Amino acid sequence: GAGVSQSPSNKVTEKGKDVELRCDPISGHTALYWYRQSLGQGLEFLIYFQGNSAPDKSGLPSDRFSAERTGGSVSTLTIQRTQQEDSAVYLCASSLVPRGDTEAFFGQGTRLTVV
Amino acid sequence: AQSVTQLGSHVSVSEGALVLLRCNYSSSVPPYLFWYVQYPNQGLQLLLKYTTGATLVKGINGFEAEFKKSETSFHLTKPSAHMSDAAEYFCAVRRDSGNTGKLIFGQGTTLQVKP
Image (cartoon, rainbow over all chains, first blue to last red; front, side):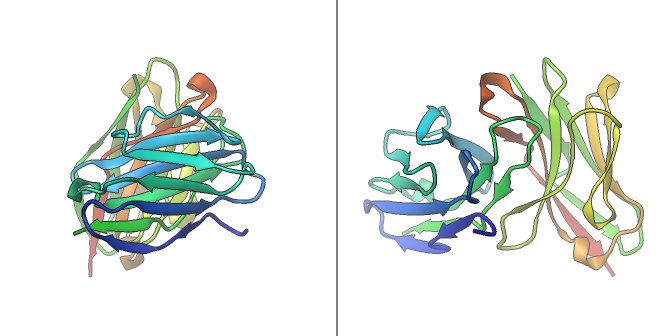
């Protein structure tokens, strides 16, 4: 696609429910990243994929958070038993390669509200 | 460990005035440095980046930044602010460490432009 696409753009869920957030990276980009943007916490790194593998999961805040990537393309971030503190904007980014000097392209984000 | 500090969470300037957004980084090796802009309800868009070479980097929309190794700074400037520059700006550092290429962000600076 022309850019990084995320869906849904907005999600309201009840506390305790599971949610899935989807990211379609730019075609051919091998590196994919998930970030979380919340008030007071800024932009936090969650997880990095190279192909279908996740060599860096260091930013996942708890075991309720998981992510997978299939076909070296689409990624899904799953949050189980959502809590109010999970409310945030979840941003996905992709890069052609995971090299420091390359640009990361961001999607529009998914705004998650847990009520 | 890498970190990024943006001085001033809010900056207000008059239209036509100089814009100066400050960013200092901490890194044990010369990093790759980025400035991103985020307009309301949108993802992050790259303004400019420093990788190697010329330390004065020009970006989109008339912005530029200068990498000063001695000061560990990468401040963003624009000679004359426009109303459309009102947005949130993020400074970020990226390295090849571990070949993840993940971005470490500052807390962000909200730029207000007054008529």
